[in-house]
Length: 281
Ligand code: PAF
Image 1 (cartoon, rainbow, N blue to C red):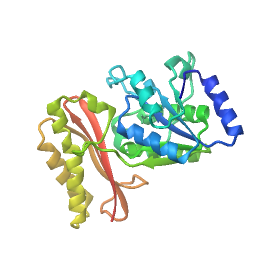
Image 2 (cartoon, rainbow, N blue to C red):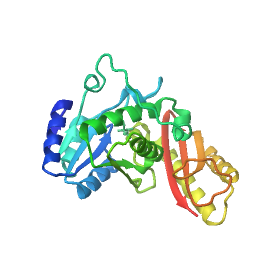
Image 3 (cartoon, helix red, strand yellow):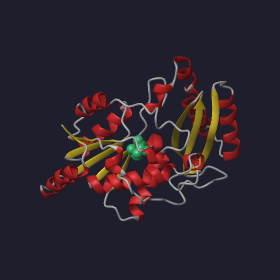
Image 4 (tube, protein in one colour):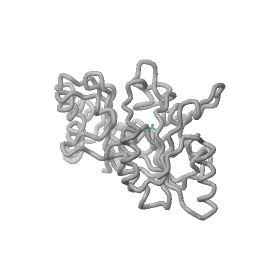
């Protein structure tokens, strides 16, 4: 497995692979791999000839006061884990390689970005769309793989690729959970063992929503009230948002009908966690 941190070198490798008719799978990440990342890489290895994974903690998508500095990093461990999944190349650019002095171009996706994480993290999706556009231009992948845990991110990037005529297929891979239900996330590392128990309130709240919908509940205001009440009973939890929107349009709905996403962002002590479920009724 190759490890490359220079854009020009990666472009050369990709150009030669494309000439040989190889398909390229791409898994963009911010590193500190868990089973969710590794599942994306294994899926990519099954579906494409040559898998590139990138590791870059993108400063542009973190707001002031967020955890850019503290974001967990362990490059050596990540490289050996990627190697075990069938990834052929890991791209590990530095910040100056991605955003040299004088960098001035940004990508903004409208509509889908005003709700959920876009509402509570202003500028976040501008940072994500900008870095992913650059990565798509560098890697030129046939298929890029994203986790459903960041469902809004995947939708925003699909829209971006469509609107900007980027030739890439975007595949969304289901959420990988710990045996007790906690969605895997690099940020779970921030949780103490007590907070780790409290964090189960997210997946439990989604199970409650699923059960209520299964038993016939349809009104989104009432459902949200039930979910909020449930989460509020956990003392360590502070709700950022609880929402039920149409999927994939992310439109406000009064009653559930068709495909919807139930999405949550909850602070457990200082750690902001997200989770979601996509349902069809
Ligand atoms: O999902 C992530 O890890 C990041 O938002 C991404 C897509 C790698 C862009 O920095």
